[in-house]
Length: 327
Image (cartoon, rainbow, N blue to C red; front, side, top):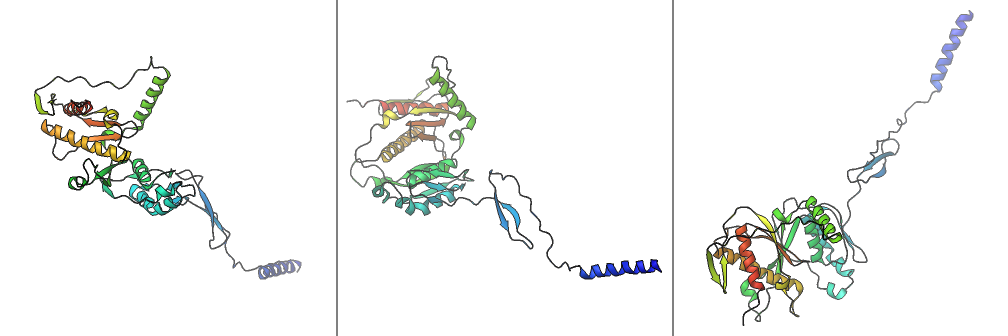
C-alpha cells in the first residue's frame, strides 16, 4: 500500500511539473559569426547586423575612398582602373578650382582632350593623395601610377603655320599609352641604381659604375648629306639597348611669350621628326614602327631603345643640332 502511494505521488509531481513548465515558443539562442582577424588590405570593419534572434557580429571590408578635394586643395583618389581614376578627376575639377590657392590661375582649369591607346589593365594600385596640382598634373600622376605615360598631341601643320612666323604648334590633346619595353624597369634595377648612386656620393674614388659605355662603331659607307652633316651608317645589329642623350644645352631657354611646356614640346616634336627623316634617309626606318623613346623632364634627358645602327644616326643628329650655326 505504501509503495503504491509513493508511485502515485511521483507520477502526480511529474505531471504537475510538466503543466507548470512554460512553452518554449521564443527564439533559439543567438549565434555569433566568426570575425576574421584581418583582410588582404590589412584593415577590418566590424558592424552589428540584426538577425532573426539577437544582434550578430559580422565583418565586412571597409568601403572605398570617395574621391574628394579638401579645403586646402588636397586631392584624394581611389585605386582602380586608370580610366575610372581620370574620370573622377574630371568630376572634381569644379572643386579643385574652388579650393585652389591661386584662384586666378585656377579659373582657366579645364579637362584636356585625351586619346587612350593600348591601355590594357592599366590599374592604379593604391589610393592617391595629391597636393597643389592642376587637373592636367593630377591626370599625369595617375597615368604614371598605372604604368602608362602621357604625350602631347600638336595641332596639324597647316593650322600651326597660319599664325605669325615662328609660332609654336598648340597642344590640342594628350595621348595616353601603356609603357612597354625599356620604359618599365624592374624595381630591383631601380633599387640597385639608387645604391650605386649613394655609394658614388659617399666615396667617389671607390664606387664602381655599373653602366658601361657603348662600343665605338666602325665607320661604314657614307650616306646622304644634309646641311653639311654626313650620315655614316654603321653595320646593322639586331640587338636593342638603351642609350641616354642629354638635351639640356640644345633645348636652351624658352622665349618670354611661350610656356616651358610648349617650348620643350615643340622642340622635341621637331627633333623626333628630324630623327625619323634621318633614319629613313639612311635606310633604317621600319614601316609601321615608331621610335621607342621617352623624355625625362627634370633632367632634360632622352632615353632611346634602339639598335646600334639607329643609335649612331640619332647620336649624329643630336650632335649636329648642338653645333653652333656657321656664319
